[in-house]
Image (tube, rainbow, N blue to C red; front, top):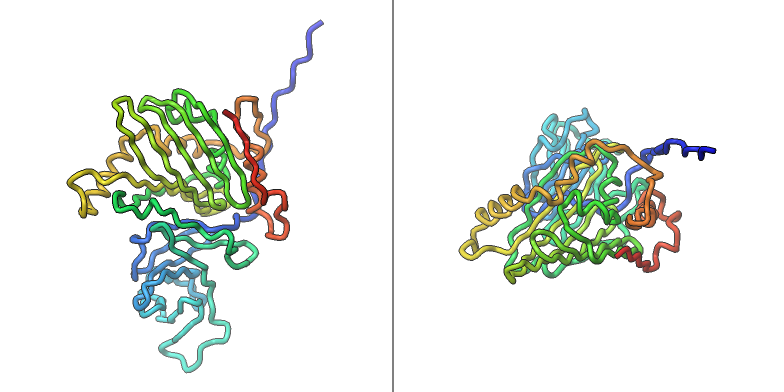
Length: 345
């Protein structure tokens, strides 16, 4: 008697109905000046700028509620941004400060001011779909090694990806993809650690370049800091720092931001232009680096019921951790606060 064949597996997938809550990196600190920058995030448009007087970073809703112009086309005066259409002046707090041809400012003349912070030579904006303020315990921590003068400045590359931003986060638990996608020869140690709003991946392995030791931590749903050393066959130890980040542009797309720092080569001390060019050259040569995932992300389906095997990493646990950013704060399971270690070595 023939055994009944299993039915073909049916993939189930549904996009989240809201954007995640947390701090999202929007770029390096040197990218933002007193010239307004347009940012198309979270299904809308934002404007980021530094106050001409204070030098502080400010992020506002970009569309002027007067007649709909984008404030990113305007100019900064003091700590306000001036609309290019009718010169309404919008302060860093979101309130209209001046209308040059009006005697009275309308009582409703206010736009959203987004909480922003600077840390690790980067700029971040806070997003909460429920309108809550930044959570103090989730502030981005300082990474002291970033400030070592032996490193180049951050160099960030940006790519628009046509998938929900959760697809990127899966990489933290996806042990099996490092060999076919990133060229690792063997993963000898692989551990995930979940604790409150942080999720860490510890990994050791072998590649053509040598023996690698990697540590990567997400601080919320959008910002991941990564440190890696590789012991080369010639006895040299290579080091670099990187960032793997996302900011949703819609529920079905995100901007992928990858950042890199490398040790400053001899002779390039004090030459920022040469240092940035050096980092860009390394990025272009590293075809199996972080950008190797892009072709897959751009043409994959959302899958809520992945068919996993015993050699996979803790994908389900990672998604349970990530889901805390998709529900209101009072619905986050208390069990996620504790430290949990998943060893898939």
